Amino acid sequence: MAQLKETISTINDLIETLKDGQEGFRQAAEGVEDPELKSLFNEFSLQRSRFAGELQSQAVALGESKPEDSSSAAGAMHRAWINLKSAITKHDDHAILAECERGEDSAVKEYLEAMEEENLAEPVREIISRQYAEVQNAHDRIKQLRDATVT
Image 1: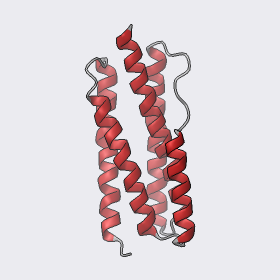
Image 2: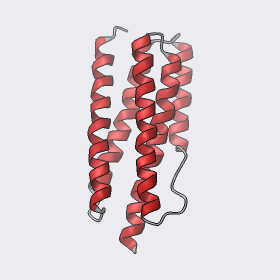
Image 3: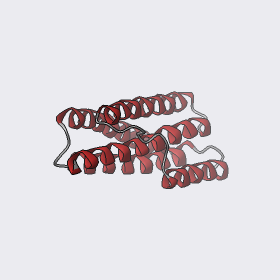
């Protein structure tokens, strides 16, 4: 029973992180001028929504009647910071990419912590591992784009 609660708690933490990313990328897409960045951020936002849905389904399958469906207070503060920075820097793509990378650093950390959980059911571990690889790829892509932009 404790193992199940721990697994559901881990899933809910990741859902919250994914919802943060979903909303953060949506707002980042609104804040950049470059159409390719807009498209990429919208793609990442949809990816995070899809990942959250996968984990919500797993939580329900494990008996959770109301899996997490919102973002965190810390995520809301980070998005407010992105909005403020976007306004101050007049849609500076480099600054927005840097903030997105910072958010992705947090997401990668959450996934690494989740994968360290010893008692995760194998189907959940497989989903988290697959999602982690894609989140890490998104992080690396954003970092690469940030490094390629001039401040």
